[in-house]
Length: 142
Image (cartoon, rainbow, N blue to C red; front, side):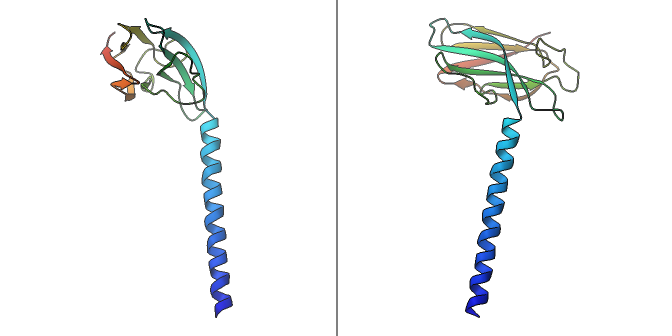
């Protein structure tokens, strides 16, 4: 009986470990399938931060999205998604911008104030009001 219990526990632990490794592998594979292409880099007026506007492409099953990240001036974008704004063309309802995703207008209004403007048909997935001490305001414009 003890041998059967030990064997059952060993099988359960092995299956759990394999499941965990599979989930981590899938997560890594899906995250690395995305590519970022920077469209604009806008330094803040005081030079401490920058706003990066970029296109993110995660493969054939998804459309292009236009994203914005606010980072310290010395930071690199890397492979992450936008930490401030994420939007797409809403199945073609919004006009295409330079990277294939929707067009955005991004402007600094002082060292701690950023304005992001987009077409009303853009499908917005994320629009954070603040990042790293920078307030972000969103405007809808034609």
